[in-house]
Length: 381
Image (cartoon, rainbow, N blue to C red; front, side, top):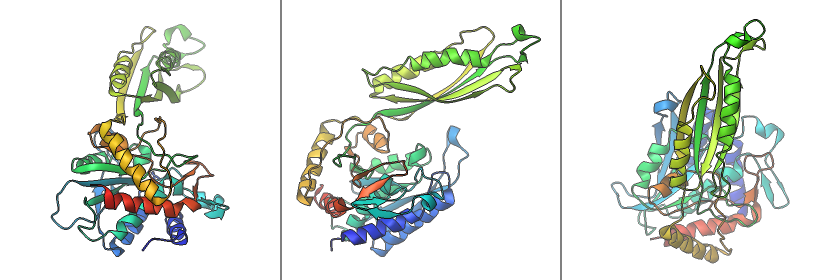
């Protein structure tokens, strides 16, 4: 039975009431349990997998990854992978000042558009095809707890499921002003740069010091100059801190740099430039820690064919699915696309305002989006 608009609004609203910011493992666990219980009640198999960031990001908290499937026990066929994330950028208490409400066609609430509504729509469709064998491909829905902070703990699970996926659909929000989907995303990376200088008294022995902040100023200019808008490369120094007191030549300074890349060649070139940075002044040293966190999501012929199938499902559901221009924001689709799995992103709820206090969903589109998801699951093969 097709879910009504009111049922979808009620269900999404209930999920939004469970605030689940990335930095609060307990709240994420509560959100995941709500999702698990709903899936199990619909007859789907739902399993929580504990995970933890490794390497430079460890020790991190133990977090829950939720796997929901309509596979029968022992079914290892290549399937359809759906991705979503339970974490949001909004802190606990956001609801106090920004309550869930409907104004006109807009359902407001933190974390609804990005992306609890998208997961709810996908899970609603899966609930209608919970019986093993009721879809051409077995369906796996993987809900991760840390996408908003880089998916450091969950990437290994995303890639493990992607190895057995024919297609990947990502329930991130549809792009505003038309509900367009995403077929290409820039890769994302981060540079942590530290400068080590030499402290001295700023008045009595200024000439004996080696200012880490002055050196960092040179490095920031060099980094920002690596931005190349024509190629789609951006470098942004986002945070900086250094020094101890105003009357001391600063012996340390550090900054964190965000960078975005259109393709792997640009990624290799930019990382090489960053690793080749050298101090401008004498008696100073640089500590360079750079990584590409998410590889670029590049549309190829197989992704183009998947888009055509999704557009047919949208037409059957009563709307036109347009393609958004390549975006600078990353998602977990970057991982699956880089592995060669045809991937479509931005298939979630239609609305606007991700990461803002005016985040909202367009209520009038919910039933169409639910029909779209059900048609996809029953026609992709």
